[in-house]
Each structure stands twice: as structure tokens, then as C-alpha cells.
Length: 156
Length: 291
Ligand SMILES: Cc1cc2nc3c(=O)[nH]c(=O)nc-3n(C[C@H](O)[C@H](O)[C@H](O)COP(=O)(O)OP(=O)(O)OC[C@H]3O[C@@H](n4cnc5c(N)ncnc54)[C@H](O)[C@@H]3O)c2cc1C
Ligand code: FES
Ligand code: FES
Image (tube, rainbow over all chains, first blue to last red; front, side, top):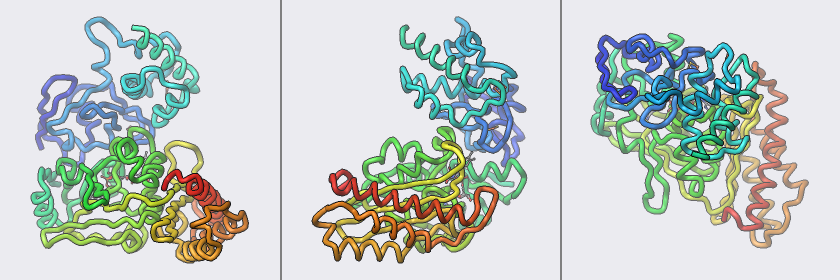
């Protein structure tokens, strides 16, 4: 089937999408947007987190057809012409990235947290990121990065 | 495979009547796991996310009509005061991303004994609205769960709404799992005190082939509260009474051993949760919070 959807501000049309295919597959394999990662395909790891109509979701659990006419924003759109987003900079500076597989999902979920909650408490950060697994960092550096990004964004 | 995408209720019901084998998909948090792992390839998916009657909630004659497709996140954000037990249960589901997409209609469709909405719906005396091209019918929550992952909806019907009366007393929800986030419950317990009718309602999860009420425990507690005049006096709840209530709730379970826990552990934790929940709920009642 054909899907028409807005991805990162641009209208995209893709054909021959299988009806049972996930939005994650559509993004990665049909639209050439491999930023969102596929690590479990069962909603457990959060590596595939994207915005769907402004709300974060696991792209692996959205049927491609459900994105018809909707707006999708992926990790690819966090940086702009001026460079990386403060959340991305903070992850780099704090050493919150090792193999990097979990990073795109954590960036999108953190972006959403900081957009909704200016200066989240530690329990709020842990709750917001509870659906994003990382096998490398042990999470401490990730928490550091979220705190740093929130400080910087709040002081702007 | 077909992908059916109705935008009105009439279209959705017509599609379901014409394709009874079509699998409805709301948040997709159960359906897509099955698709991704190729466990099940249905003849069609029926996307119900564009039907506004399903994705809205509203008040109808003093009761909440919760569209089957309202997400857990919206229940938590918008209905915490009107549906406290269901909101408590919703907060424990999966992760933020799962709660953003997952729905009570999907939980009912899946009808897993471990679904977290069920104990809260049972305790609140919720009613499930089912619609087809032949009409609308309403099934009480305690008559909805027919067997492991089987529910009362016919193949030509959609689950359209859940109808709940805002509480006249406190509600509680407890769940045991291996960690705080992202867990399927090992055992779960929902409780509602209904002082207006002087009844007690419960729901137990993951401890029987279906979610169910602990009838004998409900009757026992209501009778004890009545005979001791506790509904009026709002005196302290005797600890022995709370403990006995826990034991009676436990007696309603018939769990199995599996990878998540043994039957014995499930029953033990159920008794502990029921005792604690009734103690918390009674404290709420005494301080008239939640009334
Ligand atoms: C990582 C992860 C964690 C999870 N954690 C929990 C948890 O903690 N607690 C819990 O209870 N569940 C949990 N789940 C399971 C799932 O999220 C819930 O069951 C959720 O309520 C399903 O809702 P949905 O809208 O996504 O359903 P879907 O996947 O869209 O549908 C589920 C079932 O309901 C049917 N259905 C959906 N809508 C309708 C309708 N309107 N009419 C008729 N049938 C319908 C579908 O055909 C399907 O059979 C988890 C799932 C994942 C992937
Ligand atoms: S790939 Fe989607 S949650 Fe893991
Ligand atoms: S950096 Fe490797 S999984 Fe997180």
C-alpha cells in the first residue's frame, strides 16, 4: 500500500508498504532514515523512539499505515543548521554514548522530557527514561547528560 | 493482507461486519509485537485510531464514558480525579512510550489475566460497551473475561467504550513485579470502597486464568464494616480485619507457577497487597480524602 506522511517537516510518499509493517521499518528501510534503531521490535528497549503527532512512541509498535497523514519527527531532526541540539551536546560531553545503539531513542525521549518539564528532578528523569535500555553506560552518565542539558536549556 | 482505515464509527462497524477476521489495532502495543515476530498473520488490520468516538472521553448522565482508544497517558493526565483506581493502574503500565500509545480498549481486547486495567475496572464496577452494525450492548466487567485471553466481544463487534461511575469512596491499585518499570505483573490487586452503596469491590490480576473479583472477601468486609458501624464512625480499621480480608482475597486466586513467579508467591503477595490496600483505602476514607 501507499503511505503519505510528514517526516521531519517534509511530506514523504512511499509505495509497496506491506500492511503489517512497522513505522520503524518504513523509516529505516524505505525512507533512508536509519537514525531510529531496531534492537528488540517489542517495545522493550526504546531505541526506536520517535515523535508521532508530538507524542513519543516506539516506532516498532506503530503500524506503518497508522502514520498515514500524521507527523513523524525522528532523531535526525533534532540538530538544525546551527548545529547539535543541547541534549545531543550534553550526551557527547558527558560520555553518555558508548556503542550508541540506545542513543537515538534516549535523545528523543530526553528532548520530550525537557520540552515538558523544564528542570526535572532525578526521579522524574528516571521515570521518563524507564522505557529506554542501555547495555553499556550503566546510566549514570546518561543521567549526568540529562541534568546538564536541562541546566543549559533552562538558563537560556 | 488488508489495512482498513475507517474514519467514522459507522465505517468502522461496517468494516468489522464485513471482515470479522480483521484484527483491530489501537496503540498496537500488543498487536505489533505479534506482527513483528510473525506469530500471527491476520487477513486484515483494522486501524481504529481515527474514529473520534473511540479516542475521546466525556461525561454522560454523571458517568464517565471513556472511549476504548484513549491512551493511558491521557487517563493519567485528564482523569486522575474521576477515575483514581484506573489512573493508578495506568501509571504502572510499561513505560512512557507504551502509555502514550496503549489503551484500555486494547487491554480488554487482549484480555490477558495480567492486564493492569482489569483489576481497576472490576473494582469500579465498570461496564464495557460493545457495538456492531446490529446495535450496542453493555457487558459488566465481571462478565467480560471468559477465559485465558478470551472476552465477551463477538467477532463482528468492536469494544467502543468503558462506562464508569465516578467514585463515592477511595480506590487503590497495587501490583507486584520484578522491577518498578516495564513489568508484566506477577500479581495485581484493585480495590474500591463504595460508601454510597456500602459495598466493597475488588479485582485480582495474574492469579487466575482470567481477571476476577474476590466475591467472598468483598462480602466479608462489607458485612464487618456494617456490623461494627464503621462506615458511620470512620473509626480505625482493626488490623485483624485487614489481615483476614487479605486472606479471603488470597482464597479467590488460583494461580500457576511460571517464569514470573510461583503460585505460592503470587498468593502470598496477593494477601499482602490486599491487606495494605484496604488499610490505605480506609485511611483515605477516615480523612475523607477520596470521598
Ligand atoms: C514493552 C511493553 C510493556 C507492557 N507493559 C504492560 C503493563 O505493564 N501492563 C499491561 O497491562 N500491559 C502491558 N503491555 C501490554 C499492552 O501495552 C497493553 O495490553 C495495552 O493496553 C494494549 O493496548 P493497545 O491499544 O496498544 O492494544 P493493541 O495492541 O492495539 O490491541 C490489543 C488487542 O486488543 C484488540 N483491540 C484493540 N482495540 C480494540 C477495539 N476497539 N475493539 C476490539 N478489539 C480491540 C486488538 O485486536 C488486540 O487483540 C505492555 C506491552 C509492551 C510492548
Ligand atoms: S526496537 Fe522498538 S522498543 Fe526496541
Ligand atoms: S551506549 Fe551502548 S546501549 Fe547504550
